[in-house]
Length: 186
Image 1 (cartoon, rainbow, N blue to C red):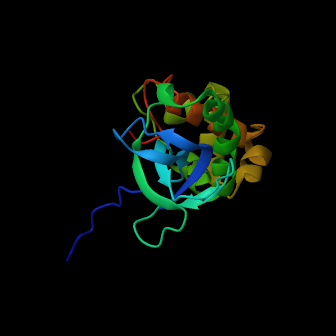
Image 2 (cartoon, rainbow, N blue to C red):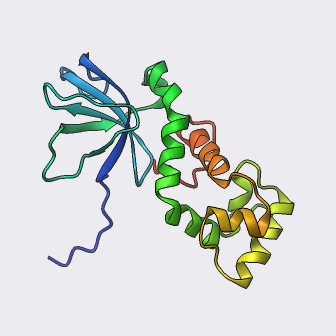
């Protein structure tokens, strides 16, 4: 009854690729409409079994929550970057930018609240394009007041295209290039 545990399941995902008659790489023996997608909250790569006769467009936001699915039979599981198709890999940058753009508040809040990871390195420095100069400017500006939007960050700090920088970091995490994850949940 009093379960306050954090939800570990995604409610929505964004489609990277789909194949009509394919075999699952995560669940032995499962075949059908196989969709590769990125979860909206946890940003993990997922393999999904779509309902028969359903079609999926790249970048489409689909409901994968527990109840009321219309196009999805089941979420088969997490899938490793190396196991997804080249076409899915090619779609990651655009879809990640879409997710970052649509979830602006979440990512602006991250910038407002990010802390040092060790005495020598701050979480924000792990985002491409943010070195000591931008880090110091961000910290100084957020002490005056929290950032309201990506535009606000650009204006107050001078960091051009924060969406692109955040997206780059997420792509590094998805592809396994990053040693430590800020955004992608394992």
